[in-house]
Image (tube, rainbow, N blue to C red; front, side, top):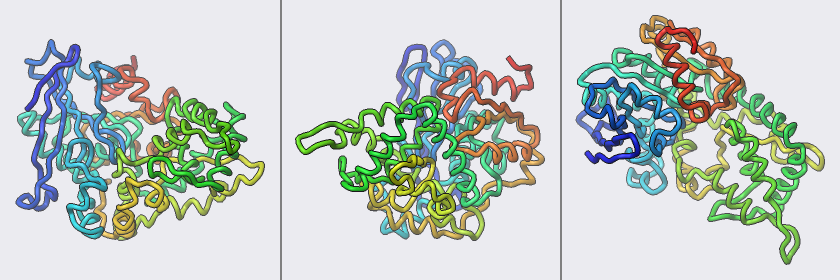
Length: 432
């Protein structure tokens, strides 16, 4: 273990060796990384543990600097474990560089089948007694981390003292098709709100899409296409996302010796937002997190988009607005992004897979005895509010805080206040 300090904190890097397949404990092992964080003044105290599960899939736990965001509130009473879920961060990362060590696409897909929330929860249960001495801990799950928390309640509630969820109550039974059928109208509402705020962006976006359709430039090996441009709409799910998108668009064009062209500034910004180099599991596993039973996910977002022709990259024509997308993965992602291109066949095999285990035990959730509180963000672009509220009603004792004060990144934006509210709810205290 390696311990060091930030202002007001003691941090300890911890590594755990866990089975790749928990049903085969004597088989292959992988390494899981977690960063323990405790207030300096309480570093010697026997504090209860809180484990943080990041959103995604595919993102390692946030690397905090000091007591920023919600962490400062958490260490007032908890010893925190910031867990890199398997395949992310420092936990045996899975990407175009490491996956070929598994073999070909079939071997890679079979390997990645062990990287859903069911395996993540079993990692947590493997780690928990080694840190807590067997005591249950509190889970804080953001977005996909909340999906993992609901799986935890289904599979191992005995390991939980309490559960806090922010923007991450999944549907318990929706197929990926249902998820995206609900998502496209939400995204369209976010786009309409953006254009109402920044009407000048209508013509800008149309001009950019037309230029990309004609020229198809590359930036750092990343092919920039109209469909890729549309996917900048993923920004619209955050509290400041509309402003970020506007600022990105206003830098789009410059005058060069051969006339008007897309600026390097814009091309680099677009590549940065749309690249999966830092989180390839998001693209590989995004639809798999909704897989259950014998029905394949089958590129659900791509298929369902055909029901919403206004999202077609060419639909804007000469005078219509470009409708941005976001929170959806398509086959073309694996053609334009150099971080994903070598993994196209692996992605196809995952999309065709028909043996995904059921993730949620509805009977067990209906009998739940673990205190649970969830922040549900009104018209959340990433997680459907109606699906979330149905799930909230299906989990015995779950208390919700439905708010329009924050977008999906409320835990980051609201920090201590969001965590305070959820802790009050889970403890049955009056609102404060």
